[in-house]
Each structure stands twice: as C-alpha cells, then as structure tokens.
Length: 593
Image (cartoon, rainbow, N blue to C red):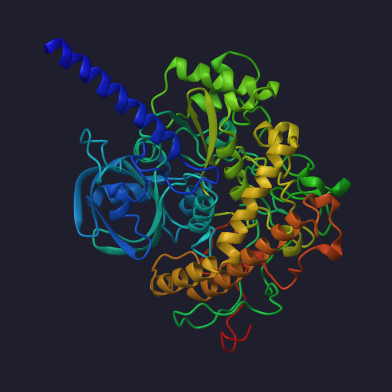
C-alpha cells in the first residue's frame, strides 16, 4: 500500500510540474514587455514594500536626518572626504536608527564644495552599514540627489520614467523634502540604489551589477586626501571657463499658480547667459592643446564641442575621456581581468572570479559578432538605448565620458541599466553654433546618437546600428514610446501634475540652485523639448526626416528655433555668489517673456 501511495505521489508531482511548465510558457512576459505573469519570479515595484512606502510619486515625502552637531559640521567642512557618519533617518514619520550618512557625487560634489554659500550636497544612506541586515522595508541603500545643474528638477525623474515606459527596469524615484536636525534643507529627488535591493526587486536577487567608470573619471576632481585636484583635464566650454558651462541660464518666469504655463512663443536666451569672454580655468588647470578654440571661432574640420553630436554622430571634438579605458567602453581586449578594472573595481554586488570571467567571455562574444543572443540580453539593451537616446544624455556611454550606466550580468548575458540624467535633454554640451542650437539638439538622429566618439569605439551600441533586424527592433521600441506616452497625452498630463506638485516646494527651497522663476521657465522649456523630440523621432521613423544627423535636410527638421536649451540648467549648477548664471536681470513683470 505504501508503495502504491509513493507511486501516486510521484505521478501527481510530475503532473503538477508539467502543468506549471505549460503555464509558465503561456504567461511569460510578452515581446513588448507588457505585464508580468502571475507567480512572477521577480518582485515588481507594486509588490516591493519600500516601493509603496517611499517611491509613491504622487506626493512629496519627508526625510529628516538626525546627526550629531559636530559630525554635521565636520561633513560640511570636509565634504570631499565622503566620510560615513552615524545618523538616524526619519522617512514620513518612521525612524530608522544608526544608518550611514555621507556625501556623494563627483562634479556636483566638488562644485558645491567650492561654493562658500552652499552646503546643498547629494547624500547616500546605507541602512545596514552599522546594523547588520537593517533595511528600510527591504531597501538597503538610498541616494538623495541635490538636483545640481537641473533648473527643471525633473530631468532624472522623466528620464527614468521614459526608460520604464520603454520596458527598462529603471531605478525607482520620488521627491522628498529634506531636513537636517529639524532645519529645512530643500527639495531633493530620492533614487533607489542600484545594488542588492534593486536586484531583489527586479531579478529575484540573481546576477551581478557593476558600475563601470574610467579611472580618470573616478579620480577627477578629488585627490586621495580629499582635496580638489588641480591637474585634471576637465572639458572646456567654448571661450574657456573654469567649470564647464554646458548650457544653462534662464529667463524671467511666470508667477506660480499650480497650473503648468503654456510653452512660450519665440523663446530666446536672455542677455548674460553665456560665460564672459576671457574666463580662465581654475589655478593650476591647463586645457589640453587644441581643446578650446579661440573666442568666436569654431573648432576646425567641422568638429563640435564636447557632448554634442557632430555630423553623423561621430563628432571628434573635445577631450577624450575614453582614452586608456580599461573596460568601461565594453571593448574586449584579452582574457586578463586586470584589463577590465573599470568594471571589476566597481562591482555594486558581490562578484566572484567566475562571475568576472563570464563578463569577459560575453565581451569577447560581442567583439566577434556571432551568436549575440548568447552573450547579450539584446531586447533589454535595445530598450535601454531607445530611452537613453531619446533623452539626449551625453555624460555617458554615448559620449566621451564613459560612466553613468550600470552593467548587469546574469548567466553570461549582459544588459545595461540607466543612471544619472541631470544633464539630459542636451544640457551636456547644450548645442553648438552659438551654444544653444535647439533645432540641432532636438533633431539629433536616432541612428547616430554618439558624441565625440566613433561607432567602433562603442561596441555595445554598434551591434544595434550594424544589423537591420536589431535596428528595426530599436525603431519599433521608439515608435511604441512616442505613441503610448507622448501622442496619448499621458506625458503632458503627468508633467503638468508633477509641476503643480513641485512648485510650492521650489518656491520655499532655502538652498535651491535656481530661483522659482527660473524653475518655471525651465519647466516650460523641458515640456516643449520633450514634445518636439517626440515629433522629431516620429518624423525620423516615418522617413520624412533622416534618422542620421549628417543626412538630414535643414528644411525637414522640426523647427525648434524658439527654444533655449540653456534655460533648463547649466553644468555650473546655478547659484554662485548670490547670482544665477544666465539669469537676466529682473525687470518689469515676470510674465513678460
């Protein structure tokens, strides 16, 4: 009898397994990455508890940091040290004790450190640094970004939303009102750290995450002793200047009503937006030979400036921060892990020697160009580039700065994940031909998105543009994005609601880089830029405008001549010595644009 029961149990188990397998095949994620199946293997944003608690985007959350007075004073005196201090954090009234609290960032960190009038740093919280296993409802780390160089307060938010709408597992975001020891510090954007908790939420904890970055960029702006370096070859804007002035400035805004103003007609940059002629780099800095053209002159041979696509997206102008890359360009060189320190020295989750060798094998497979599906999650990478290229972000893999992306490896297959978009929508290198050519920026060819580099130097993009089938899929994703998000009116509705929610907080922000009037102008511009970019992408997809920049006829481009890219923010971040770069003097009614 027992033998019969055992046989029946085995038969029943086998039947259940077959049923589960059949259901799994029927309910898997469909080709356009729509809804997750029932019984999903990875927790979705709806089921992750911290996603519901902190990353509800329908309101501004509250975050208070309680830190010892002497520690707060030391942090502000030595921000470049990135010292991890013990602090308590209270999120929407719920306190987590003994977390790690530290400054974070690179250019944004050094820029604020150099400003005697600002202590608006970005911060990173590690909930489990001092209490093993401690999280905030499952979240292990959190970034609080200071919205440096973004007068719209929305570039990161919208870039991640566009990534999600394209089918990418983007990090979660929300807005928070930050206080330190009970004192108002300002409006920040909270971003889910792309590490263990992200991996649990999106991939059931499976795989390894890296954050590639060249050693030159990792060290740029900070010496080992926490002092600002004076020998880094920072890219220079036209006409010289200390910190790069990649667009920025603004115009007088419209008084806030909680309603999104209509996009301005004939918007032009106000006087004073460009950096004064004759600016020189900070003491000790010397721009590399040939990188800064004389005042009023354009670079030779049609070269554009760093961060702006040139003809065919192959612009060789500007300093090459990818020179000497050891893996951040995702090129295969050999089988030695030491040749890929840009990747392996920057793992965000635990990585074994076996994990590292799988990455190298995948890069080798990419270089050989055969059986790419074995080495790449081609669909995920295509979706990443569709969103990334839509938002025109060149402080990244598609520019010459080789950072600001994550590399995900699972079972020997690679994918890319988005990160850091405060300089998106053309702000990094905000246009050539006068520094603010919105028509050139917004009509950038979707098939030629690179800036300052060649397609061969970016193999993770080159395989897409080199294969008709993959390129068609890339176009398909872009078409779905423009139709479902922009043509449907969802973007405009979401944008206007977000603007209305943020405006009261911007108006009272004590540490803001930009005044509320410039926020209003910047938001009108960003709204317009997104809709014009969607129109340009649609034109490129239907063939009425070439998808390659160098093959576009001027008369076919979407006319963006009334838009000022610079009004959305400058690489200098905003306030300096009580003034705001590029903001015209306040005269008359702020409604007169």
